[in-house]
Amino acid sequence: MPAQADAYPRFKIYQGTTLLGGSALESNDPPMGVAWGQFIAAPAYAALQEQVRALTGTADQSSLQLQVYHLDQPVPAMGVSLQDYSAECGAEAIEISVLGIGYPLYEQLFPHAVAAYLKAPG
Image (cartoon, rainbow, N blue to C red):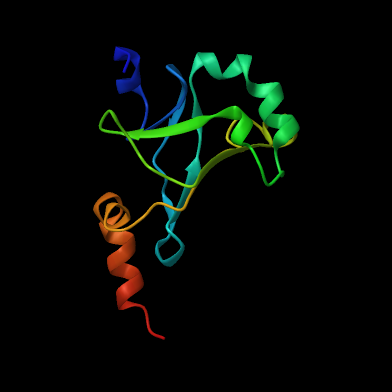
């Protein structure tokens, strides 16, 4: 991974070898294996931004071939998507969603979210 990746939060989002940005993936749904959060764009994202905006809200973004990395290792997932509402709502309105992260990896990546889920009543 390029050295510039260290400037972004703990999860890095790539298209091929191009760093698009990062996220803390601060929101979680443990039983579904889903994590999402604010996307912090790298300069290279600008070249893809219009294509992402056109696909925002669609079910299939596989054509973008997005991959999430943690500690320089790919995170296996069923899907990665970006929702970019920055034109309407400002730069902070870009979100990344990672769907279908399997266990036990999900618990290793998000131990606090899994613990909170297991403690929740019901």
